[in-house]
Structure formats: C-alpha cells, structure tokens
Amino acid sequence: MPFCGKRCRIIDLGNWADETYKISTPTYQSEFSESEEEMDEGPQR
Image (cartoon, rainbow, N blue to C red; front, side):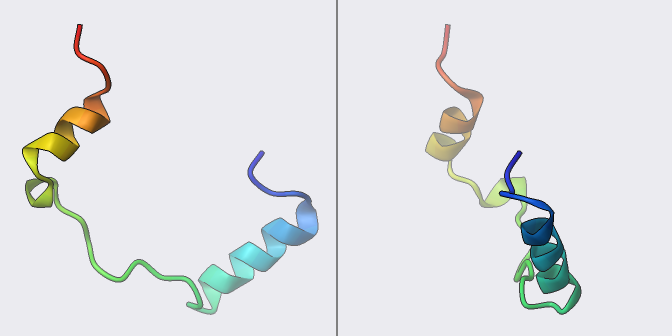
C-alpha cells in the first residue's frame, strides 16, 4: 500500500481535489523516443 495510513490517503486526496497536484500536459506515445519505448517493454528475449 503506497500510503502510511488513512490520514495520508485523505491528505493526498485533498491535494488532488484542491488542484495542488495536477497533470500539467497530456503525454502521447508519439512523444517517446524509440529508446524509451524499449525500456518500457523490459528486457528483450
């Protein structure tokens, strides 16, 4: 579980609700270079 307790979960949720945290720009697959795509796929077999 990524949170230490219920209080931490509530604080994090509040930060998203208040827009303290936000995703600034969408990420598109075409923005990744070929080397980054290979890293995401893991080791080649």
